[in-house]
Structures are given as C-alpha cells and as structure tokens.
Length: 135
Image (tube, one colour):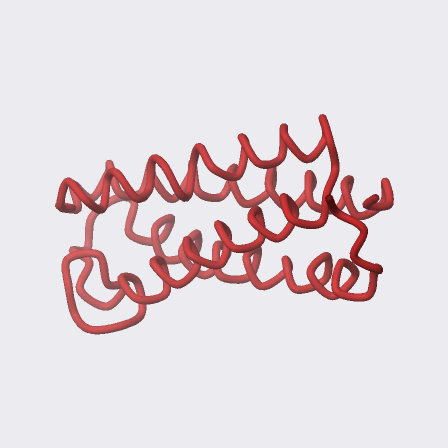
C-alpha cells in the first residue's frame, strides 16, 4: 500500500508537469515547430494520456507497480524532451528557435519541464523505501 502523502505528491507533480506541458505546447503552436507523426503520437500517449490514466489507476487501487509505471512514463517523456530541446540541433532545439512571439515561453517551459520531471525523484525515493507488497 502506498501512503496517502506519496499519492498526493505524485498527483501534485503530475498536475504541475501537465500544466507546464500545456504551456509548452502553446509555445510550439506559436512558433509553428514541425514535428513528425511519431513525435505527436509519443506526446499524446506517453506524455499526455499515460500520466493521467496511471494516476487515476493509482487512486483507484494504489500499488507500487502502478506508481513505478507512472514514474517510468514521466522519465520517458523527460528523456524525449531533453533530447529534442537540448540535444542535437533540430527544429525543436532551444538554440534553433526563430525570434518570434512564444520563443521565451518555449525556452522557459522546456527548462521547467525538466525541473518538474526531476522532482519525481522524491516520490521515487519514498517508494523505493517501502516494502514490496504488491500482488
């Protein structure tokens, strides 16, 4: 069983991250950044739907396994964002953005996404310390 405090922390972090991701998506829109279909699919499924679905499942029947799936989905989204925003030059990289309205929003939210995703280390550490009783 997962303590309520960890559930509340995961919920807060998911809602915060999704709010930042929404604003980041608006920055994408303002800058008309092109993305491949698979990137859109990844963002929709792994970054947008999975955290909410896993969070709902966690509140319905809290298990460590579901909490770890949630943290894994956030980690996958984080690696995706870090690669495309700060990795090799591409249209989504923070250094290649045109000087248009939305540029500052895009850059700030890219960094805030990384910070909000790193914050998932706290509940992960708390979960790690719990005895495994999932069935």
